[in-house]
Every structure is written in C-alpha cells, then in structure tokens.
Length: 167
Image 1 (tube, rainbow, N blue to C red):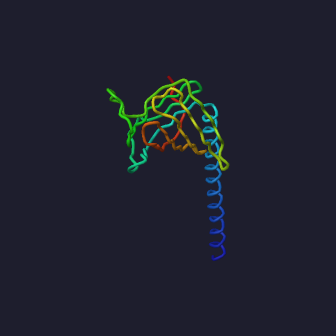
Image 2: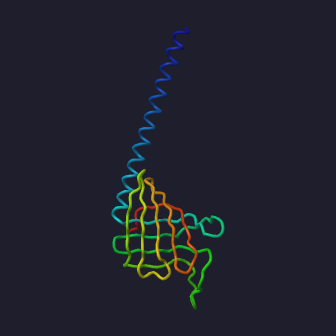
Image 3: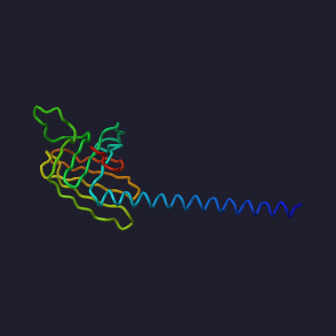
C-alpha cells in the first residue's frame, strides 16, 4: 500500500512540474510577443502614450483621469497633457494651462537601452513652451515621459504606449 501511495505522489509531483513549466513557457512566449509588438510601434514612430499619473517637480504624484495622451506618428506630434507646477510667465488672455499642441516639425531620436527598452528624445520646433520631451519605454510597453518647458517647471508622466487610434 505504501508503495502505491509513494508512486502516486511521485506521479502527481511530475504532473505538477510539467504544468508549471508549461505555464512558464506560455508566459515567456507572451512576453516575447508583447516585446516584439512594442518594438514595432517604437521603430515605426506610430503610437500613443497614455498618461496615467503626473509627477510635478514640486508636489506629490497625482493620478490622472482618462484622456491625457501624446500621439506620435511619422509626420505629426500631438500632445494633450495637464500641467501642475510653477510657471515663470503667465499666458495673457489664455485659459489653457496644460501642455497642448500639434506640430509637424519635430526631431525624433531613438536610442536603444543596453538591457532592453528605448530612450526617445523629441524636440518640437514650434510648440509654445515645450523645449524637449524625453520618453523612456520598456519592452513591456510601460513608459515615462519628462517634459522640459521654457517658462515652467519640468513635469513627468507615467503610463504606457499602445497602438495609435485609427481616424
């Protein structure tokens, strides 16, 4: 009887090991597929950065509601992001306090990271106060965006990238 129980437990152990290995291989395949999709989006310059949290230079992390993003395409850059922080000059007669612009004139530089992911530098040429946007993207699609302005404190956003919406 003891021999049968020991045999049965060994078989059960082997079965559990096989199931665990199968799940790990499947998760690894999904991770590789996601990394390939993100790489394709980054290299094609055709994606949307969706901001989930805002990190002003002065203050605390603030969660954001839906709708704040930056859309990158090969010929156009569009940003609709909030701003919270110190401004050194106030716009006269303007009710716009965020980072909102659309431009077709911008420099876009991609630098692959050693351990995966990309550092992207975007320099809009005719966007009001925005001097530079630094986007760090991981292989899994998570991203952080740092916006450096001329007349405002720098501000950062955390979120993810996804396929650009179809028009």
